[in-house]
Image 1 (cartoon, rainbow, N blue to C red):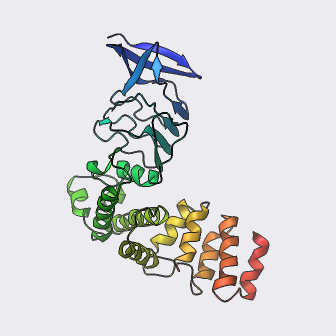
Image 2 (cartoon, rainbow, N blue to C red):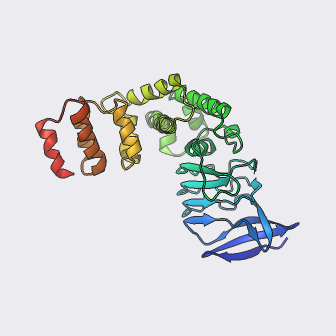
Image 3 (tube, one colour):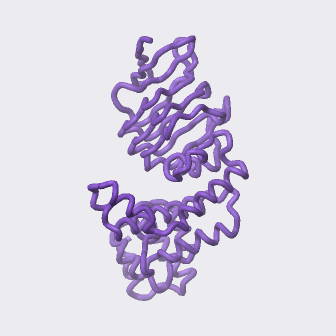
Length: 303
């Protein structure tokens, strides 16, 4: 079947036709925002080919049409800047790991047929299922958000959270990884905890169907790794990855991860970064932790 090209909205789509249907094979060049058409020359776009957008490093968002029926293996794998995908909310034939390696993917929004906008309260959880949970059965478009799916998502999350931090280290060493991070136990454990912190934050900030016992376990984990604890990954993840996200730093403070004892150290770590988070923490201390001392108040001039 002949490969064809469609020029549309500043992009050049590669596709093929077969039996009155079109399959997207990829694009020529790069674009940060992708919107796949629902039809080409009267043929509905029903499939995205295997590896169609593999390693599209500039891609940040992708919107796929209601006509879609199949998403091929590794279709959006290793898109290092991909943050959001919008899919039709229906059963799709899924290839293997369509989003694997796209570690910045934060949302997979689902759109009901004919709707102009997607409305999916569990979009962050679905994205995590596609990228981080290592359970292909969790990435289920038709089940996403229902009570049983949320229970399975939480069960898998708790397995990850409760796994000993050193588990998997020997396997990395035995496979002959050359990357220093994969053969250094201390760093391996540190990265494992950071991954758990990200997962705990994510679930607490997307609390659809979250049971109280699970919530308490997540909160306890984040509290146990804040600034001033033997390991401080909760604070490190917030500082290095989410310092400009109000929902994250508000949750950090309200969970009790910001304390009278660690407040000064947190301000020192921030230095001149994230003035809005710094201002929020100062207000929070004044209103909830007994006010600011003289030296902390001086740093207000640096915001």
